[in-house]
Amino acid sequence: DFSNPADYQRLEIEKSVDSMENKDGMLVARSTQNDPSIFVNNVNIDAKKAKAIKITAAQEHGSAFTIYYQTSVDGEMGKNNKRFDNAFEADPTLALKTVTLSPADTNKLRGTITRMRIDPADNVNGEFRVKRIEIWGNSESEVGLFIDGKEYFNNTPVRQINGTSYMSI
Image (cartoon, rainbow, N blue to C red):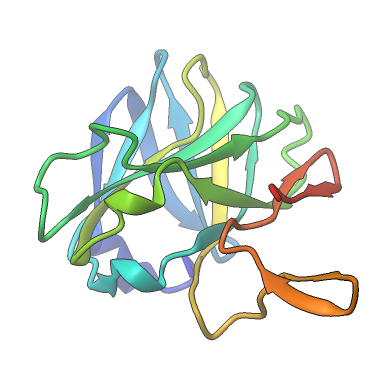
């Protein structure tokens, strides 16, 4: 939740971000070049509980939102598929939308997530906003699949693309 200005002490501009502020209860930033990113420091989340990330955001240009992470087990950021990502349509009016970001490789979710990097898009030069980032874990509802009356569960998060939900089976 980006509504508390005190939480901005945990944020650090990595590159290509000209300004960052709390406005109307959300992070509002302007990128100056391609591949902007912002670090979220002092994260303390059990990686096993991170099944998906739900983000409410907007971007003026671009086509994806990615959140990279590092863990207590592996201190490298973003290497070896350590990311959550999904398609994210740009909107010049900066209307907020919510999408679910799925992990690229669930085997990398080990230990404690200690740091995250918000990448609003690779080819962005404009404003982006983040209202909320939620980590979905075991306490959230699971997807159930029934075949011939027998219940099966799939640990793959549901991906949403253009408002349509998809699940690997």
